Image (cartoon, chains in turn brown, purple):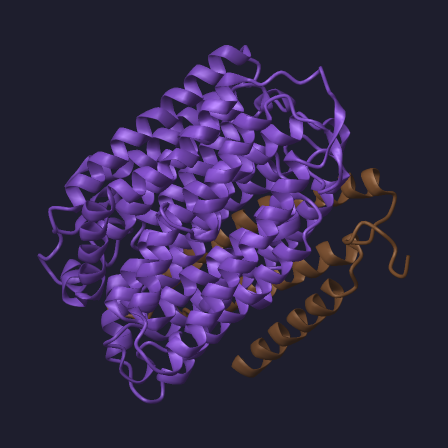
Length: 109
Length: 501
């Protein structure tokens, strides 16, 4: 399971970085979103991956670590707010500069 | 438990929320609310500084959950010092803003308060994940403040700033995740114990997480490969915002200092002081890069933004040496550089207002209405920031140069700091002579000098002679700060059973 999980994170991050380097606002926002998914899953995995154990706490039995879940929840909320902000900013930048390039001008001009 | 510890976070938070709900209140009411909160922060942080100077660490356990399980706020001499620096800078920046700059958007004051909440929280927290949360609070407020007033230049600089910081946040979370996955804690004092006790198998992963944190903090502090966002962002922000942002790079430096003395400090086994080897060359290169940028700047705002980069390099050189003398020199220089950079950004705006459409671009412009007054202030600011006697920049740089051990380090540091100071002086003289002397015959009659703005700007710049006058008690304080920072047992007792006060 760990290998599958790690491979999925790797693909997500690689796709995210690729999109980020496209230097157009929409792909950049998508890239940032993919990276933040990968980071959230990574944080979650830091409580170690288990199957079939109690999700929070159980007497005597093995249980999942609740703290990474709380961290992920916080990170997701913050990530939402940031994505919303960057989407609005990207729209504003297209409106102000008539281009969706992140430098505000077409390359080579 | 001292409830006063939570006030620097709670006060701006409540006033900020109030301002957010009252977005349609009339401007005078909003100004009074915002000014009240910011003014109260000054005596409050000074009171906390006095308390911290008693020597004991103070903690505040949120919801009375004891460390290391709950999130604590931690007040030591270092965080108290930075609270005072922030409060004073914010007070004058706001005083400047209420003379009209706040009218260009409805939520300026709310954002300003949330920004202060994030900054104060980042300085006070004793928990690494909580540091991340406060970073995000101060960042999202700073994104909006940077864009405040609108215009294509701000949007362009803002887009870079936002995207870079979002990537930085992702790195921060990865580093936090790795640290938690290996040590099982995020409390900084507890991390300090666990990292010191790490075995050979865990050490490389911890080291990787530590260096990832360095990248994140480096992005905030803006040192060499990571400072390219700063000049555009600072140069395009409105004056009070740029002045407040003078403290933003110091948050990164504070975090570097905190993490690499407490968690990866003297006692961390194979990982002890691992950042120093990286920071030393980066510090020198940052100074060189900043000076070159300052010489090439085409506007006063650009020049000042690059001088912020130079000051980051200077501070980093103090941090990277790892000796107590160099560190206390850096802390003294930190106070000076935050206030003077803030004052100079305000002054640049005052000059810009009298030059009409030419703003502060370094070209011939209309004659200023108050050339002697503004020129005099510019002269004071330039002397302070370039590090010439008798003002505070000189004291800071002198202490730093004296602290370096003779040998290879001195061979690199002395020329860079001294030639850098000379080049800064050249850049500033060129800017000053263009702005004040290479002027046309006519004045713009539209721009009257506003005395409220002038007061805020002059007060910040005149803190420089005050810093020289108060150098002895301040240096005693920063020396004690450095001793406290290296007394790891003091911090570790916080997480031992029955250790928290």
